[in-house]
Image (cartoon, rainbow, N blue to C red; front, side, top):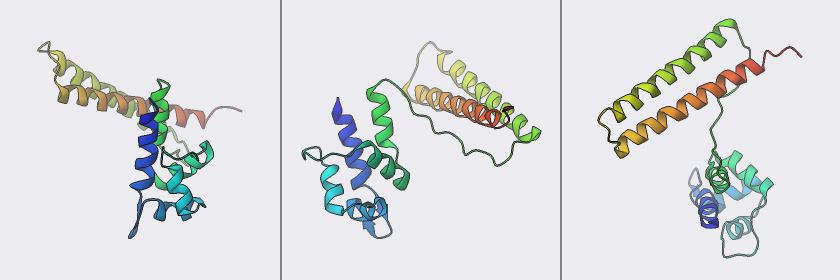
Length: 153
C-alpha cells in the first residue's frame, strides 16, 4: 500500500529537471536541502523520510503533485487542481464561469451517451468519460472560487 507513496516520492525527486541538472541535485537547493539528504529521504529503504512540510515544499517547487495524489488515493480521496483565482470578479467573469461549467457538463453527457449506446464500454471511452468528468469538477470548483470572492462579509 505504501509502495504507491514511496514510488511517487521517488519519481518526484529523481525525475525533476532544472536546466542541465536532474534529480535531487537539481531540486535540493531549491527546497533548502542538501542533495544527499534529499536523495536519502526519497529512498524508501532509508530510515530518514520526508516530512509533510518538506513534501509540500517539493511539490510547490517542482510543480509535480504525484505525492499529493498518492496520499489522497491511499485514503480514498481525489485531488483536483483548482483554477487560478481571478483578480476581480465581474458579472461577465461569473457568467463565463457558469457557462463553462454547463458546457463541460454537456460534453460529459455526450461522451457518456456515446460510450454506453452500444451497451459496451471500451478503455478509450472510459478515459474520455473520466477526462470530461474531471473538467466538470474543475469548472464547478472554479465557479465556486469566483463566487467565494464576492461573499458579503
